[in-house]
Image (cartoon, rainbow, N blue to C red; front, side, top):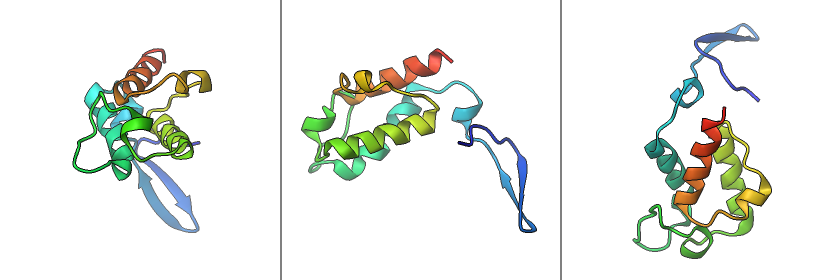
Length: 109
């Protein structure tokens, strides 16, 4: 897994591509960044016009099944370079709780 590539040149069959790391990989992240990323991943599962907020109960207020939840959690883990244990995932109900978990795990690094 590629964790960090800051202004690196990658050569592949005589082609050069510059890879620049995201701000998340370089340092601290804000709660707003985490919430924005979570909401972005959950947007396809939004029901009606009710916006996704911190108090949104992921499996109750959205049209999402458990497989899609696990896929979304894996994408969030990759995006923020954290690993959320399965027993912790089972105890996350709201968007706020997921964001808090990501921030807590990032702080331990």
